[in-house]
Length: 357
Image (cartoon, rainbow, N blue to C red):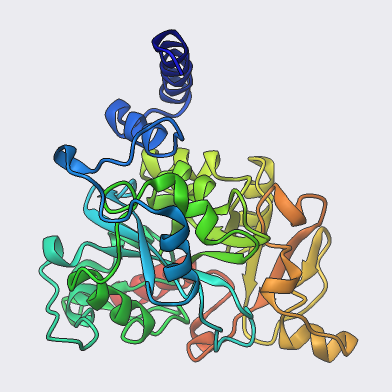
C-alpha cells in the first residue's frame, strides 16, 4: 500500500470521527485511537513504540481458544458515565458457563480500574470489591441504574440494591486478575483487530456486570463483529450523564433499553430502542408489544418450553437476531428478586418521603 492510499484511509477515518463528534460529542483523540486500534493497516506496535507481546496471530488465537489466556482487556479509559477510570474485559471464551439461563456465552465485565480505585487485592484471591461498592455505589460502571447500590442515609453509605449479580463472586475474581496483570491488553499486548477473531462464531454477553454504555460503542462493535449472537442491556438510555446517554443511543443496535415500568418502555421505544422490561417477581401478565422472555421459568410454566440466552438471541438490541422481534419482559429473578417493585426509583422516593414525614 502506497502513501496516497494511506492518506485516503486516514482522511476517511477523520471524516467519520468528525461526523461522530458532531452528532454525539466525545473526545477526538479517544475516537482516533479506537479507529486506529481497529484498523488492519496499523502495525503491531504498542505504547511507546515497543513491539507487542503477541505478534503471531494464529498462536495467540490458539492460546485464547484453549483457555491458556483466560481473558482479554478490551479497553481501558474514562467511564462515559462519570469519567472515573474503568476497564472492559472479555472472559470465559473457552470455558463452559455454569449459568443455565444464559447458556454458554463469552462474558464481558465493566469494572473499576483496581489500581486507580485503590481496591485491595491479596495474592491470588478475588478483589475486595465490597468496600468500593459501599463508598461509590458503582456509579462509574452502573450509573443511576435503580437496581444498583442505593444510598442509605442512616448508614451513611451505599447498600445493595435489587441487582442479581453477586459482586464478590465473578466480578471480584476478574478484578483480581486485572490487578495481577493476568489478561493481555488489546492495542498494547496484541492488535485490537484480533479481538473479533477471538470470539468468532460464539455467543457474547455484553455487560455480564456493569453497563456497556460506560464504554465506547466502537469497543463492542469490534468485539461482536464476527460473533454468532449477542445480548446486551443498558439503563443509560435515560441517563443524566450526556456522554453515557449519547453512547447508549449510538449502541441501540446492540443493546436493549433496560426498563422498570411501562412508562419507561414507551419512552425507550419512542427513542428507537427495543426494550427489556423487568416486572415484579412472579408478574408474567401478558403485555401488548412485549414478549415474555423465552429463557424464563415463567415462559416454561406457560408453554412447557424454555431456551437459554445463547440459543435465543432475542435481546440483541434494535439489530441482530432480535431486530424484527417484539421487545421483551421478564419477572424479577435471582436472590434479590423480591426487592424489585413496580418502579424501584419511585419506591425509593416514597420511602424517603415517609422517613421525612
